[in-house]
Length: 281
Image (cartoon, rainbow, N blue to C red; front, side, top):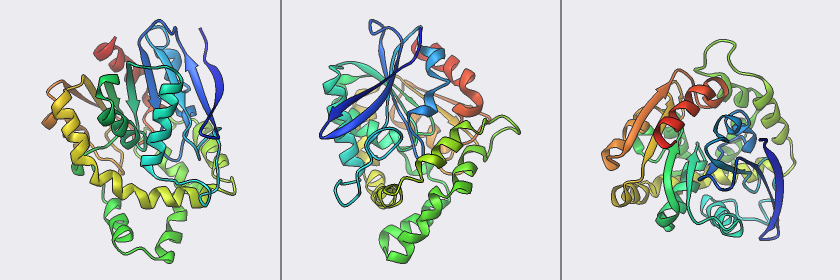
């Protein structure tokens, strides 16, 4: 088998996605994070394709999908969730597992909350929906959200500076364990002239994800999905207590960690894949 690459037209946008595995197998949707795209799953998909039908889209504004200017497109997580819902419906999916990471968590959990009947299980890899999971940097962001100024907004351009992106990949990982391929591609995507203001809009809107945490937690309590929370335990953005917190609301949650950082698929993809197969295979 092999991974194939596709685009579809949706809401006047071009949505790129990767696909692998047999469509007769259970489907798993893979929702990427920031500042990445579906290429973050390039090593995971071959390890799961014998057991799952895998689909990994790029959101609008990311990767190979359309990147409209923020003046012509509303960059909020609610809007991205609506577009991903349209994507799911266009592909005719009615039951699926989902893998959520970073930005993929609020997108995926909004979809799960609106359509709990779709969800067969959840892998959350550093995909936070708890206050306990917010690292120290979020205090500074709270100040930006509470008292926004053009100067504070401009300061967040460093979130996608090349050295910051590289640091997101390397912080907390074993020495020499991370290929430069992933962060080099993300740095290249960040050079698109629309990229900065689009992403700054999403950074400002992230506050609304935190306000939705109680709704996401209610979804877990009411539906009790089978869930694997597997964390790169050295991630400074979403800290490991965010993984442990799932057990408060979901008695079916399995909590694991790997000795890595935020982008733990870069160094521990085989261990993460093995855990997914043990829990859901």
